[in-house]
View 1 (cartoon, one colour):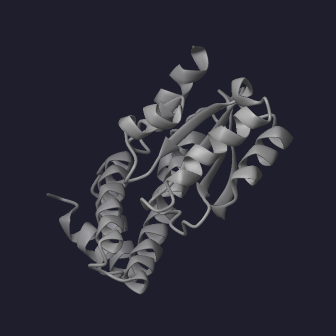
View 2 (cartoon, one colour):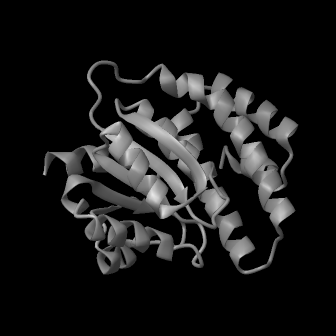
Length: 211
């Protein structure tokens, strides 16, 4: 597998090696979107190990820093493919309260922006009410909420419950994602869409807005 060494460099948090390997792979003509997909899976695996206490927060953060550096190098290549013109939709995107892992969210943002969406990134450890306030301020079509730990998943449900309580549920499509989430969870909490990965998110969100 051509990306094996790069994945290992990211896993170990070796930023300089990861950067060198990324440049080399791009020079060899490898697909940047494929690189992003493989590295996202690598980071999801690290997140699962952290959740099981098999690795610790410093290790996870080092891997995240390495991946961020890689994405910064890949970004211009992906942006070259970006679509211009009227935005396909407006998205408020963030990571729910109590969760500090935003690498996946950052990749989703990149994918959305390069596919014609306008994105308001509200960051990580975001209170449920903040998602809604930002969506109202932006005039958003979609609220995208990520959770990378089972302990923070209820934050996704809370956003939907707050929208219902405020009589705003029909105004926004709620999209969830993150390693521990899935279609069953999305159905359980009443989310409009579950996105399993960053690369499919633009297509799935565009289709959602056509419904």
